[in-house]
Amino acid sequence: MSNSKVTKHFFKKEEKFKKNSQLNKDILISYKEKKNIMHDKTEDFYEVMKRGYEEMGEINLLYAEEAMDLALNDQLEYEMWLGGV
View (cartoon, rainbow, N blue to C red):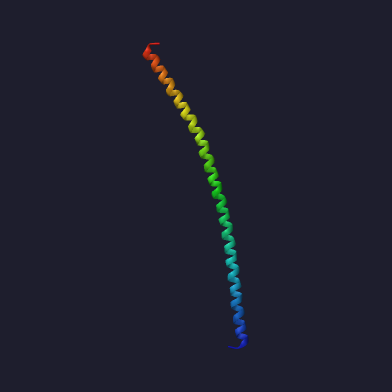
């Protein structure tokens, strides 16, 4: 191989390497950006779920208190009926 052919061959390989390096860099940046977006969405999802569980806890407490009040009223009414009042 002549010196000019070796030089051309070297530059072709170097150019191909630069293209591949740039492509890999672009892919890594894209992957990192997508990963950050997914991480933010995951955090948002967990925050929404946490808030939902807290709200349902309050609702469940209200239902439980209402059920206990009704049960107590039924018990008192039954005892009054038994006593003939």
